[in-house]
Length: 265
Image (cartoon, helix red, strand yellow):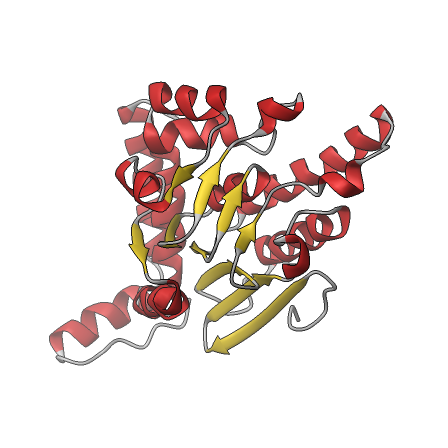
């Protein structure tokens, strides 16, 4: 089971079918160190194998100031090229695990969100942000570049010209700009952020779990394929729902004017 087994994360199920993952290094604005990279990888890899009845994940950060400030540059101080590459390979595994996680995921961005932290948020299915949060990709200003799928996911969110401006200047931008540029879905007061995210998650828990996973995969395919290839994938995904007991439960509940009870079967 995932609960309470990590050093840099808090992992809990506040209610049935819902997982809350909190980045838990608030003294360094939840910066990604080697331990956190490995633990995030392990969480999402395990959910690829067994969803454990979960239907939605909410990812947030501990503290008032930061969601995730990016890679822990203090830990990276003095690393050899080989050590740096080894750590980055772990980060790559983490981001692949996030991308392949079949459970829909919401980022609740409670504070500053830079570099690898922003890449992690962009790897989620969608995001809500506190109004006080700031965003940015400062990697070019320290001699590297985004390396956790940022160049791929940012351009899909806001378009190539805006993505070039953001990454090539390295300058921070506001939560309102993140909303205007389609990087986040809503800006809410920080005190309301987690409940806002959990409220959406509860609504998502009312969707049949196999349907939700198939919808997620089909929408992701739409960003990678031409329309007819994407449509062929959609039909295959749709056909996966036909033999499910949840499909019959949904039809029965509609006709009986009651709330369906989905079991992922």
